[in-house]
Image (cartoon, rainbow, N blue to C red; front, side, top):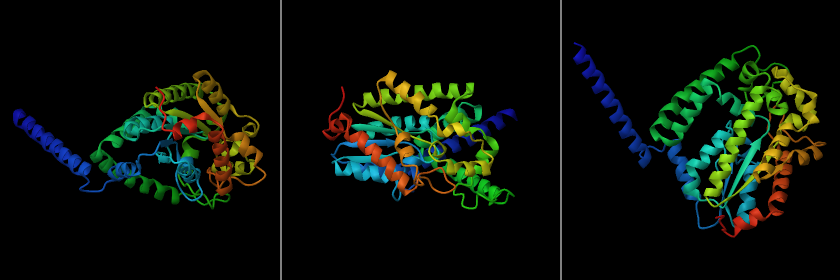
Length: 340
């Protein structure tokens, strides 16, 4: 009886593995145009004989109407370079590293740009240090490499997102005064689970924040090593949080129940930490906070949102352009030069 049960289990496992292997092969061949297949095809189609730039970051770096990502693509194109944007919404430094490890050899860039977001890149790492966060990170790595896992887990994740969104929209807090124009409903989850996330990111006063910062430094060091191994140059730009720039956004977070502090507007702790690290590591790092604070007489961020508006994107891009134009990194990349 036991032998028959074990044989049945072994056969079931064999069928499951064989099915997954067939699915993996079919997805890799593009029999079904899965998101991962489309992503890799899109990258291959962007590759030409021109020098290449890889852009790593979160939603602040995505290409969209009047966005920094779109402006950067046009900027590099005007200088005879192809920009390959690998940014993704909601991700942090470990993801930036994983993208470079996954696509660096395929793209072979001359320049790697990391756009670090002071508003949540620290807590992105902090939450990954929990047991749940480690499991989630592992799943992301598997999904980035396995076509079948990407498709199957992606379907489950999509169902989970829809269920979470329905729960948020059915709650009493949804649409409360001061949040009628909220563009990211999942901020309600953030406020319930991590009401101190701005304090963690922008003041770095807790031991947990210090531990996460150490991990971020290690991650950025590894990105620098991988960049050098590719013969490319690394440039880091630091995007500030909205509450470091404009007091008008405090009410948005307070309506959500997320804790704020007046010191956000007068300090720059994540930027200072990063500047010290970059100086010691001999990295080219640039802070966008001073430029945005100088322009803060105009509204630079979207209403009830953490992201830059058209004017904010323009100000940020112009500072990035000046940084690139004033340094030899861009000239080396334009010439196709590789560091050896």
